[in-house]
Length: 137
Image (cartoon, rainbow, N blue to C red; front, side, top):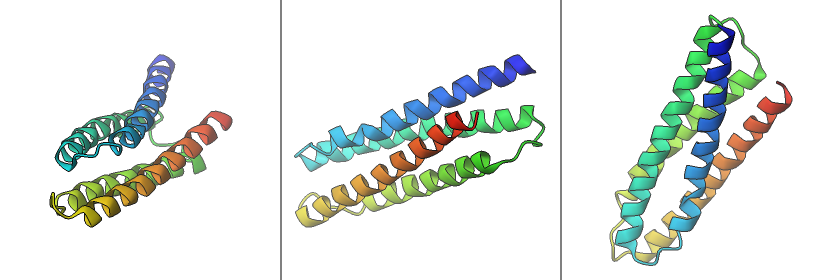
C-alpha cells in the first residue's frame, strides 16, 4: 500500500503542476488580437485544464481511498475547496465566453480582464495549497 500511496502522491503533485502551467497558458493566449483565434485557443485551453483538473481530483480521491478515508486535515479540506472553486470558475469562464460577439470589443476586453483576474486567483490559491502541502508533509 505504501508504494501505491507514494505513486499516487507523486502523480497528484505532478498533475497539480501541470494544471498550474495549463492555467498560466492563458496569459500567453490573452495577447492574441484576433478574437476568433483567441476564442478557439481559450476553448482548447479550457479543455486541457479540465483534463489536468480531472487528473488532480482523481489522484486525490485515489490517495484518500488508499488511506480508507481516515486521514482528514486542513490540507485536504483546502485542496477540496480549491478544486471545487476551480471547477466552478471553469464553468463560469466557458459560459461567459459563449455570449461574446466578434464585434463587441468592450465585452471582449472586459472578458479578458475578468478571466485574467480569475485565473490569477486560481493559480495563487493552488500555489498556496501546494506549498502548504509541501510544508506540512
